[in-house]
Length: 190
Image (cartoon, rainbow, N blue to C red; front, side, top):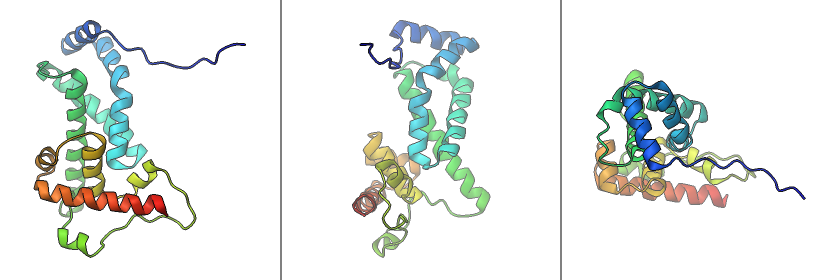
């Protein structure tokens, strides 16, 4: 009986990865391609969870790697390359959102007014009888609540760190996280 073949990503040894970082910073495109292949799935997953749209997440993933290529000489090695890249991708998504809002001439909707939340503002719309999974429920969250939920509950940032990233208070982040959890609970119990 033949065993089923499964793809298992190759984990690069740390010294190989560090060598690729140094070479890529020096302009070696093949070294950067190896770094890209090693990290692209994680960055795409992050972008997808933050924006709730796979097509837009693909664009933002590419933007994050273009930015990484441009700024690779600024990587000092104070943290792991994956951590640096993760933070860079979060910034790309947040900057994209701000740019989009400026283009539309609207105020930044990263975190909505607490009074609006208290009166049950936006709710994730789910057609009756449709069973949804967590990813779809997260995608259905209002943008501000989705960002805070992903950054806190999925990526592990603190309320203070999220507040700094989004330009709001830690209390506003906590309110949005509570709102996101309540909306997720409703959507998943529907």
